[in-house]
Length: 241
Image (cartoon, rainbow, N blue to C red; front, side, top):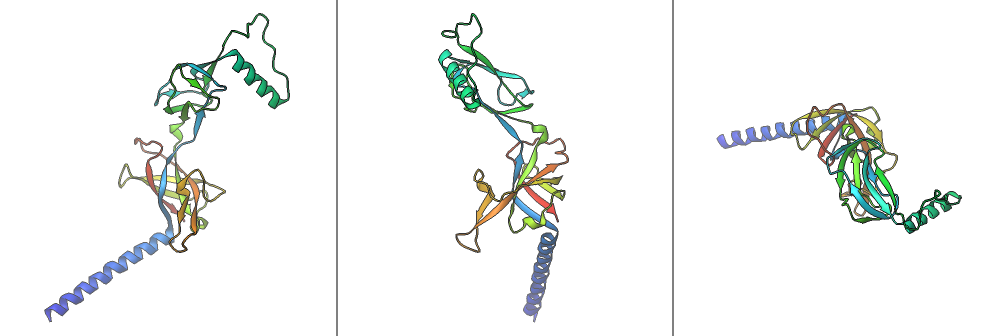
């Protein structure tokens, strides 16, 4: 008799716990779109040389603050390379290469030009070394405005219908367990999936061979409350329907 009573009590407890959990899951699904496929991000600009040249000077390091127009370094190209680059540019524009200034010895004088940043921000990464030869288009540094960081989340395609620009969102960073940051959906991309990001697709467990696409959704944060936050940090997002 006692064993039957204990078994009944355990069964009731299991039903209560299971029912509570089911109710919680139902409530979450009815009111939120949730994903842990999210991270802190920031728009960034790649600093590149205008032509193949020798890097004669480099003035910045990772973590330095810079302002738009600041000189980051100096490049020096050979006269032949300078004439070649000018010829290519002129051809693309359909014009003739500019003539050198009178008295300028273009045959022997290397052309020295400054490398400047077009935006203000923080140097996220740089591998430039004075004295190295750099190619046109070779990234020398990355500059991002860390005062305008946001959350980039990826929402499964079957859930995106419940996400609208302006929806409020609760954001939780792995770096600060239990701490909530308030945000707003500021942009929903116009394409599902992204060949540049593996996070934008996932193999389907329902239909083998079928890939579940994800839509990138940007969430602006009201305030990071003075916490140390940098691009790449993992986040969990709950978007209010």
